[in-house]
Image 1: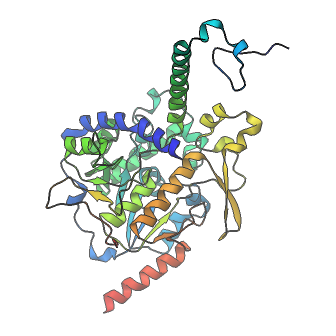
Image 2 (image 1 turned 60 degrees about the vertical axis):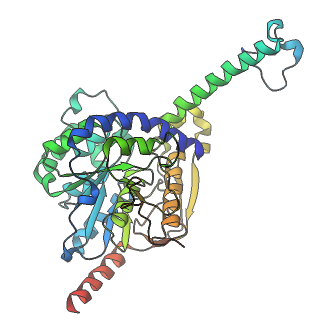
Image 3 (image 1 turned 90 degrees about the vertical axis):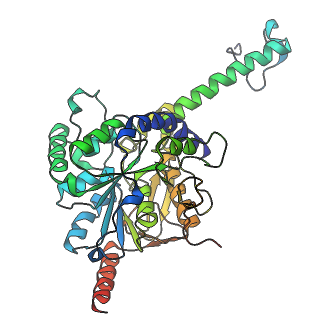
Length: 335
Length: 81
């Protein structure tokens, strides 16, 4: 796992710093400048990642049917699924500095010019992207242009400038933060370098956008309880290895007949199913378990699938979480 | 069948298999150093493809850090013991 952690730092630190330099002119507000959420929103929040259970469990449909009134914080990869289904999130968290992939979550105006890349087709994080890519991209551009001004972007300074430009074009308000990438007290700390450059507050990431969304809801919005959905950090039983996110990379390390050795099986006792995960998702899982353990916050796992089971994580059906929150909101209103 | 040996040393490689110009300790160290650098570079590039979205560390219970200003210390989770 140390190797994945080191690789992530090497892959993202310098390019993230270069992006932060380019993004400097647009850093007008920080996450600490966010207005408080309206009282009608109540105390709870749901953070949403774009894992396969989002579709398998019809999570969005449940949120709509149960008329969840609380705060909705989504990772960038889940925003399109929300908008296509008529749900407008309150916040979208963007943290990955990849130069060409991330803009796709906002609708990429330059998609036709990009080199062919099956990153989106290969995974089932958002099946809408598996077919009719161009049409789906055009649809997302329209949806983000129409609703973007209602969604606050929790933008990491390291994110690619093309994403920042796309958000600005769509009228999305930006609130900035620096990712904590190493020990800010260490000599030559990268995090301190980012802070010195930008002056933006620094926040723990959890390693990916879904984890950052959950941390943001707790740390900045100070919501409690905070549930998470769509955060499988693994693949459902029966998912072909070729449909996993890092398949093309792992096949370089392992011959086809031994490829399964690269994956890790995790039994989910709540579902009595054995899911599996790859080294990178397993690292995400360990990061999230570390955040939960060290923060002392309870994480309500309403994904209804996946591998995230451990200390501090309460497994709960989404319907139960929402009904309990709606009930407590009504009690607060009466008293 | 002759044992195939590449331009690197392998486990169990005996002195007689080693080319004479590699018997010199300094040269051997140089070669090993270069080989190690190549391996490290390969691993770095390969792992770069497997890395996650963003680096992660957490210092104690602090989830926020706003510099060293006395008025704005790093924010903990309120669960410090």
